[in-house]
Image (cartoon, rainbow, N blue to C red):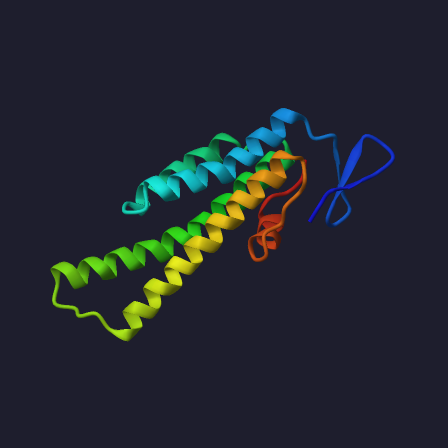
Length: 155
């Protein structure tokens, strides 16, 4: 969703929330939340706990920023959190097949394909959101936008 501009120096977000002009610095910080999640996913895919810690530290570091920055940091954290859980299950299942007595089944193959598709969707959504947010547009991800609105209250 794009931010709709008013005649004044405020921007209107979904839900009739009005926010003063988004400064360049705020747009930069908000877009970094998505880019950081994407980089952490690429670098730390084999170790999901590192992903979670990096994203959690980034989110905690930006909790006291403006609503725009807080919202997008939390939204990127929530979307990445789900992917990290899916990846953790996939990695542990794969390790139990390699080092344990489990065998490759149709269910395992279906799960790994699902995880790969979810990772691809999250990657594309994060890059898209980072670009849109950097250009001072508000982005609400399909599932995570409404959840973030509940958890992140405006000033």
